Length: 200
Image 1 (cartoon, rainbow, N blue to C red):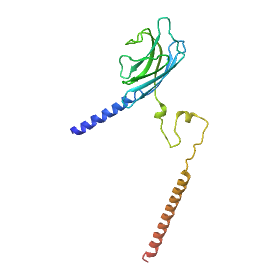
Image 2 (cartoon, helix red, strand yellow; image 1 turned 180 degrees about the horizontal axis):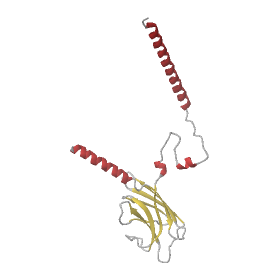
Image 3 (spheres, rainbow, N blue to C red; image 1 turned 60 degrees about the vertical axis):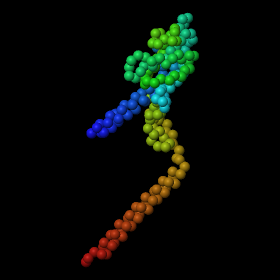
Image 4 (tube, helix red, strand yellow; image 1 turned 180 degrees about the vertical axis):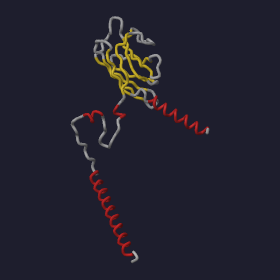
């Protein structure tokens, strides 16, 4: 009974850890919170050491923000709740960060001091995680993948037939027909034997 209970607990831990591990893999579109055209794109992927690597690329951001504010700082909202986690300054709009806990959204503040521990300035951009649909969609065959875009598309593109497929199909069809013919011949022979050996 103890072994069964231990195996059950281990199974639950594996499921829970698997769900947590994929919690921060995705993309983020950080949009301006005001009339400015600020925008940043971020992608987060989990590495083999279970840390998340976050890559950021921004457009239309202004440097300096004003006479006293010089820095944009990126923050993450953890999946389990709690205080925002500082990733660091986005520099001139290109940055790369490593983060351990899973997170669900990112936001950027304009800060006077790049060494702040908690968000102190105005939030200028924010965005929530979006799943990486390419990694999640089902593969229906070796040559075709089903996506929402393909199903909504009105133009159908024929998928190429891989080399050797037609020969294999012909061979399988021939074997099926030969098997069917052999089966019918066997039934006919058994029927004939039955008729000939039937007592009169």
